Image 1 (cartoon, rainbow, N blue to C red):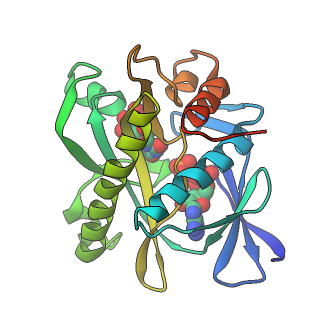
Image 2 (image 1 turned 30 degrees about the vertical axis):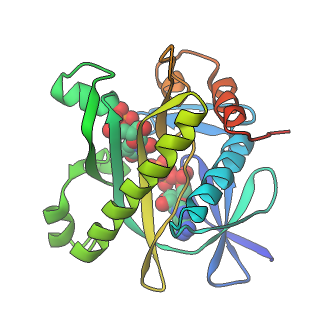
Length: 237
Ligand code: ATP
Ligand code: TYD
């Protein structure tokens, strides 16, 4: 597969065309951002760790029957994916209260959410990724009702698979964000699943092992990501 021109440079990944019109290369960079890009730093090894972490998780999701864009690891920092028409709607599931939910509703961090909640956000940095709902998504044409139903079903299916996977490694999957896109009309999971886009706590100590370490300046960010991976049986060398 031939790597061609850069199509897009996001906050953490760069997207390249290939000689196959249906395939892209994602390059995971060391850039780390939070607060809609207001806090940005380079964290050594992050691109490699997230690329391999994402490959591992996408493999587990595929085994569970979830359609994903992931095709193959290409190098330490790159993977090949199906080229999707991205749906500009982010799906967030929460098992425990944290982050934005605590800020919005004033509930206690760590409160168990039963049943888990499902929220939609518009993927639009300039507008600060505002919260939306199914009605707004349909009216503004961001996604059809059928696509939204599939996205919700798949997002909860991911929850069942990953909640147990992390629990087996002694961790709680607090919340996470997924992005979907269309591949020849079918809804497929895109982007990445890594500690950059979810919250993970140690089951016993509730120590944060995700991007909140960066957001809150706790240090040991990549060390925590690697610890999460190792607990799931990943190797990063
Ligand atoms: P955010 O950090 O909020 O996700 P971003 O655009 O800065 O936004 P990056 O991860 O840096 O995010 O960039 C990757 C870009 O590639 C995102 O816009 C994402 O939606 C897009 N993308 C991910 N997977 C695919 C795919 N399979 N096909 C096409 N585009 C994709
Ligand atoms: P949330 O608590 O709504 O936002 P914040 O990170 O500002 O506190 O986020 C819920 C989960 O979804 C959290 O693990 C981060 C992830 N997420 C993203 O990675 N990107 C996003 O644009 C959004 C809305 C959430």
